[in-house]
Amino acid sequence: MPLALWLLCLLVPSDAWAQSCEAAPRGGPVSILILDSAQRVDEFAASVQSAQVAARDRGTVIFDDGRVVTADTDAATRQLNQLGWGNRPIQIVASFPMRPQRAPGSG
Image 1 (tube, rainbow, N blue to C red):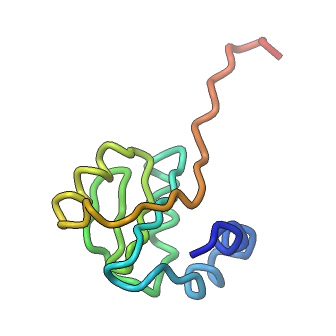
Image 2 (spheres, rainbow, N blue to C red; image 1 turned 90 degrees about the vertical axis):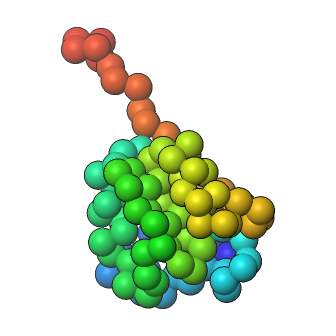
């Protein structure tokens, strides 16, 4: 799926985009969305209704259609390999790194 389409999906209310954004067919590329926390991964995964979960642990959800949502890329890699998907092409759809914590009073 083109990056622009995924980014558009992020701008549409979650109820709508979770149902309409589709990943590549089985055997196609794996699309990875990297979020900044396990909580955000769980929130995203709860909104997806168009795919079954193929693997899940704290901070990573892999859907059977090739979408991966993770806050832990090492865990996602291990799960992809366990599913036998380690050789599939990978597309990083978007990455939202954690923001550094500011010290109190640092303005």
